[in-house]
Amino acid sequence: MKPFSFLTFLLALVICSCTQQNPVLTISGGRIQGVPASGTPDVLIFKGIPYAAPPIGELRWQAPQPVTSWEGVRVCDTFGPIAPQPGNKPGTFYGDEFYWAGTPEENEDCLYLNVWAPAATVGKPDAKLPVALWLHGGAYMNGYGYEVTMDGEAWARRGVILVTINYRLGTLGFLSHPELTAEQGQSGNYGTMDQIAALQWVRDNISQFGGDPARITIFGQSAGAMSVKTLMAAPGSRNLIAGAIIQSGGGLDTRGLSPENDVPQAFYDAQGKETMDKAGLETLADLRAASPEIILQAGGWFFPHLDGSVLTQTFEDAVLSGDASQVPVMIGYNKDDMGMLGGAAVDRFCAVWDSLGHPVYEYEFLRELPTDEAHPASAAGAFHSAELWYMFGTLDRSWRPFTEADHALSERMLDAWTAFCCNGNPGWSAFRHDAPYKELLDIE
Image 1 (cartoon, rainbow, N blue to C red):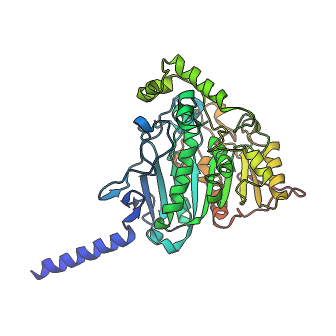
Image 2: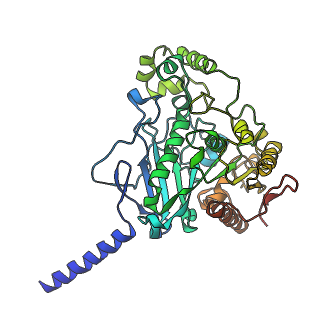
Image 3: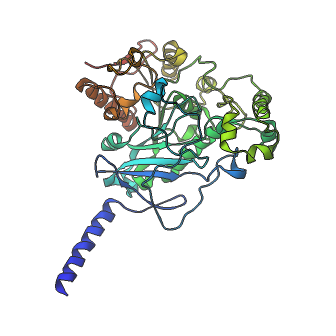
């Protein structure tokens, strides 16, 4: 019996050690346990944590509801489904760049988030690490929180907890309709409500992962960056933010890229009704009974708008009135970005934000990504979204022939992005309205 007892003792030690390194956490909805990240056991990842109830059936086109509780310990080893979306098809530029491996399961039950955290601080609320909440882009129609470019291991190794989320997209996320407005007082902005609910979830639960709910930086790119601006202005979220990073999302004077004044709810209702009528969906019962596929096939492009409740003023007005989150901001764009996503609109925001007494740091990403003989010359350039490989540290996932200089640039950007989350300063000079400075990001 003695050998058996000794082996049992050793096994108990191993189990105890593993439990200490990978504790069970109690969060909204129940208990969870993460798994070691693929690159290092020093980082734990919690995949597919629900942050709200599934927005299906009668909850389609409703504000997100509290998460449904579960029994036992939920092992978070699988990413959740993503919002139904048209996607970027193979043979298109972005399809070949980011979606060559296909897309995950699509389901209306999509309100999940993911957390990467240092294993040493998980389960230790007193660690109070800085937190970064990522909002993906995709024109409010496409995207999800664990695309091939996105990963949190390099962030967690630098002492920053990274959270990424899925939220409702397209017609299922932003439809306005007269019957929905009659039911709720306003309609649309459901995807924005999801983002706010996720931010509130982080505030309420991130201490379990070792994070500080008072040190949440929100950041995003493209529509995700425009969402950052929206959350800085929204009454339900602007006081939850300690910092903001706006990547290729414009600045001030970006009419047509963000919610606008002087457009009544009735305009958006009529737009949504026309789209749904063409699909033969005329009543609220029709709308909620239709399959997600039918809803998507109806077409239409819907995005955040002022509704007097979720969104009460534009980002521009909130900035100028002092109602926006008064926090350090890092903002920039890529050399070959689209239209008003960079340039003068960003410079103007920086000048105004500095004149209001808030720290602001500007950058421009200049690196023209390398290509190979199998891809056309158009695949080169510092195009919209090109920086994502670098600031998430995922160059090795790309088909591109990146060099040691590219990896060095990635390390530099990871250091800057995480430093900003830690102390509100990426490590370069602030922009001053009377002495503008812009950091140039390129290989050496």
